[in-house]
Length: 300
Image (tube, rainbow, N blue to C red; front, side, top):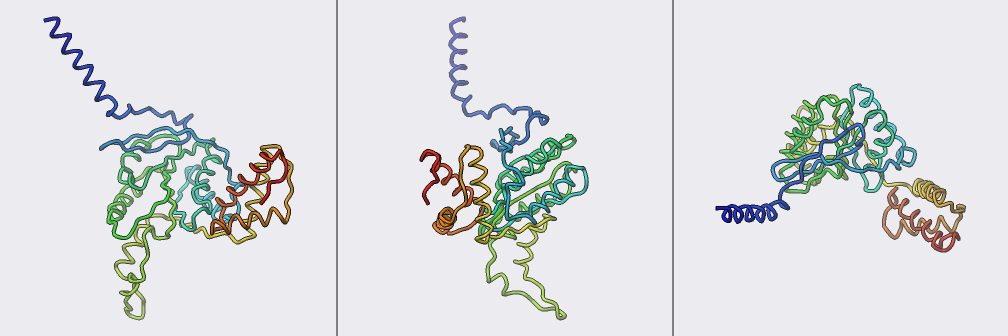
């Protein structure tokens, strides 16, 4: 009898060793007093909030060329943190112009006042009711952040998301807001064919049902902020800012010159865009080369 029991227990241990790697990790209880950010992670039919280690080294004053957007979203966030009415926000426009960076910089600005950030993927927005349920009643103020919220032609799940946003956002507690970024104003591709069925009724132009359906999704956001490609002076201003910032951190002596300006322009031309991301990448390249060359100014 003892031998059979030992054999049974040994087989159970073998089965557990095989099954255990397939099981989700136990959910961690998050201490929101010390944890500033988390990510919603779906596991099978369920999901959980996983704490994130974040760096608060990106500040609002680092974001140049987006003064209007920074002020409007900052004011909306200040209202939210203060417990006042505020709107869900959609940040749309050209890539690399600071949409995601602006949201993350707000965390650095208002973390001490109770702001917290939760990242959620587009494909997991159907879990919004579960996420919101876990945050209700907490003293902190939570921004749910969905980066790159957009849909391709033929995808029908945006209609499901529209109904989820309707229910989740309208019934969300006052300590939860949704901030989303997208390269598209209406989150879906806009086709010329959508505009062929516009009708004129009593002298007024009415959009087609296809257009109305697409606009309806972005209408869930009360605040729309548009981001545009930088002009060359704006781009060069951002380059100077990041070169100066990185040079100070590395104790590197440098000065702005015509050669450096031309190098920055060539860098942007080679990538086909002028934006904040491109400017920061050039600054890293230039300062890194300068340090590698022993503190001399880097070549273009």
